[in-house]
Amino acid sequence: MAEYGLDPGGVAGVWPALDGRGGGAHYYRLMHTFPNLTILGHPLIKHKLHVLRDKRTPVKDFRDLVSEIAMLMAYEVTKDLPTEPVEFDTPLEHMTGEKVAGKKLALVPVLRAGLGMVDGILRLVPAARVGHIGLYRDHDTLQPVDYYYKVPSAREQRDFFLLDPMLATGGSAVAACATLKKSGARSIRLLCIVAAPEGVQKMLDAHPEIPIYAAALDRQLNERGYILPGLGDAGDRLFGTR
Ligand code: PRP
Ligand code: URA
Image (cartoon, rainbow, N blue to C red):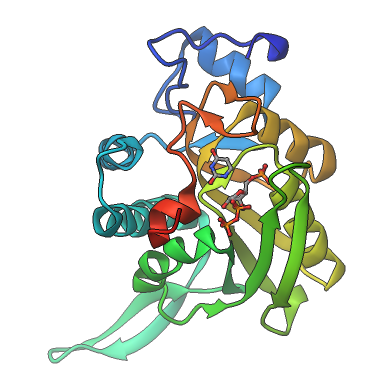
């Protein structure tokens, strides 16, 4: 991360939370460098993430953990959703409660690995619509290749949560956001579990208005475009391929 003027310190060079729980010089430097990034540092997210990264974690547990982390992330990412009053009767009396107002939510996983994040979020927001963007990263060029696109209609009126556990070079996320925008989406947030500085920077250059929420910002990419320390190939670990 030296090229970004950042040095998180620590054993693996993984950044601490960037959601107001951290503080200190590193925190403010990182916020300045990547104003598009929020690192969600809830202790449960951290705990589940360390198990997810462990190469001994079997496929079933990996799948459960991706889903649980996505749910916890969604809980934090939706904390600014507006609410509006709603009137109803309890068994004892009339009252005014609150319900979520505003735009309708659409989840858009980037295939394949993003699929693992859908169920956990749907448990919190069961009425959300789900679209799909099919992209894979060419192993040699690292460029995204698209093969599928289907997202819910009324795109101008929706809040889109783009889901992909890995933000590496950023090629896939930049392409997915560009496609979503071209088809009319006005409000997009990217939820990824592990991000690399290279990907965050690429998103900042291409789509500076799109906020990124990550469970961790890792140190760097290796020569094959894998995140270090990372968790390996998310799609393979999720589906047991390889
Ligand atoms: C992974 C991951 C992202 C992409 C990130 O998918 O799920 O979509 O790589 O890399 P990037 O930021 O450098 O574009 P992959 O291409 O391996 O496809 P898969 O999910 O089908 O395995
Ligand atoms: N895609 C993955 O699944 N893992 C990485 O480390 C990078 C891209």
